[in-house]
Image 1: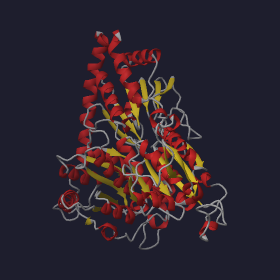
Image 2: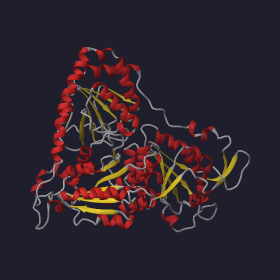
Image 3: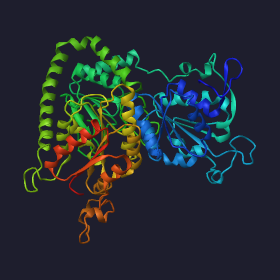
Image 4: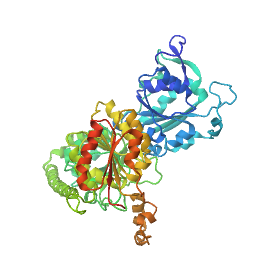
Length: 611
């Protein structure tokens, strides 16, 4: 720390518990702290005002879920943890579904929260002096989020605050990564003590308390896998989040191209493989039926996947050999989960796949005529399949018919994506895909080929897109890519979940404008579709005059909110509403200009056929 409140003995500095926590974050390399402040944080506010922690940038978020989603987006792009500070148990609950998302998405973040004071008659600095301190007192604040955390603890005295923060970061940053949660009372945050800084105690040195090193595979396992891949006639790789890092994305691509192995993305958290490659087998979330590449595969390599397939819809052949590489192969946060396979390994996929590619090259089978002939035959077959798939996608992108002609037909997601893709030609796009029932259409038609071109929340709690867009924008600025265009794709219902008034305010305040595409189909398709899959008879249910089935199922969101006006009022966003195909090009052009030239967020509401 610099400029301490007052000097201590030689080699120490006088500090409060809040100072110690912020110091620990700084020395550990945390650069972004998203805060939603309350009466438990006077020590933090005093520390912010002192300007002693200049390397730690602090961002105000009027909503806690937006704050944690922003930290998530930052960590997803940079690979580095961010931190969040919230207010007692109320603010902890305000984190809402974002806690689920960072947990299930294995996203490294540290969440800090105060607690009510533990004294009530002025015995210590920070003792209770507001009525709310009694109201916000709960028996076990940490229990609110305990089952989602990689690590959780209470800082009871400032003397070990640095060690506890470093331990929390150690867990958050070690595979399987995820969130950590720390609490401290006002008294612990206010208490002054002498923190040792010269020399730094080993227990407080981030370099000596770092995360686990990435782990690869042993030689015998590499030999087994290389042999299986080279002997396979129709191997297949299935993944969900191998591309979460540049190294993982590159290692997967290198191995697949080396042996011409097709790659399928099932329920992907991020884009893992170039969709422009003939090896790409597409994306699948819910529905879609049996994947042909999975049914015909004789060897399936599952790499970093939570749901490699849904057995009731698609599954490998009973004769296929399945191998599983994952940072979390046991899915320790799930109660019911199974992936029958020959072998499974806990490893870092980037390391393991690079090792495997090297092992394949060294294997005598690789240069044999039989294997090379098999690879060439597979290439020809996969190129034909890719061409057929591209033709189907291109057909779906054609101008919608109807509505009087002249491009006046209703807009479809594939058509809009094709025109948006054209409007973005020459720009690097980072897309945030929270399109629910249109997840696949966005992923299929964006035609991305770079790491982090398309990312998702990692979980199932909707509303991540808005805070994440702010965090992603800050992350791109931090890694030297401030000119990238951030586009959030979201459904109309999901848009409301994202507390948009907070997100657009943050985007304006911190100069992180982003483009939002809202797919407005007038309701929640996901619960309606879930009902139809189990109760198809509901389709014939009686509907009141002037109503649609979605009204009777209580999944209708009509009349629609004035999405653009909300964004404009909160953050001066530019907006438009697209109802016909002929309006798409102009909307895309103006929206992109608003973000890139005017530095304003932009919202394009795309009116689809109503559910």
